[in-house]
Image (cartoon, rainbow, N blue to C red):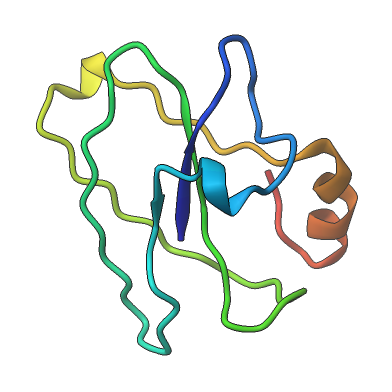
Length: 94
């Protein structure tokens, strides 16, 4: 799993860059991969789940625990425009 801070006004990550990541969890075979991160107020972030092998699609379950009121955060599911067709073909809906 990787976490990136988005540039102002952006709604998705335009390219994958390990050096720009705010957090990258180690790749493990376990079902659960936990991490802890402090995010800045007023910024937009994207969380990208990843598999051990490239080009693998499947279901992902994400739990987010926040130390704030739910009214103070906005969580949305988004896809990169180039990936929308691939996700729909694999049966993943947005």
